Image 1 (cartoon, rainbow, N blue to C red):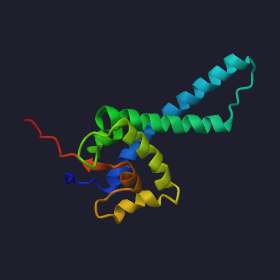
Image 2 (image 1 turned 30 degrees about the vertical axis):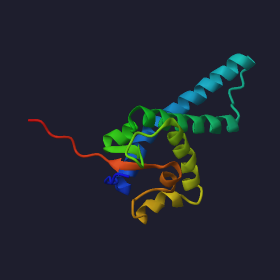
Image 3 (image 1 turned 45 degrees about the horizontal axis):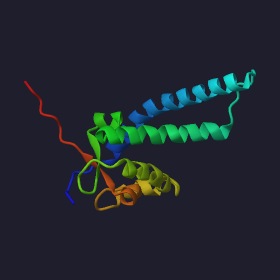
Length: 148
């Protein structure tokens, strides 16, 4: 297990905020697509969509967003902006299975008033609960060299 510098909580939250600016339009697009499909299939003027379907689309959108970005480069766009990368405990890019497990485990971290997220403030390795459950961790990348 390699030792990596862990990003601070404010940096993590900033990356999450940045990602939310991408995720919200994605969810809106998925819901609009579902509403369009419902209108075409139903042929009626009823533009309402089942709340459970909206929730499922939101969860699938968020999970799909994170798994896709983590598998491509180990970083979402927000993580790239804040020099954060997701690696497994061996310092390698995480597998698709680990990425999916991390997403599901984050729900466990979020459930008890976000305690699994706040855990990084007390953990000696600055890890979340879902880091331990998925065998992954966030690392801080070094600043790029400035070329003159």
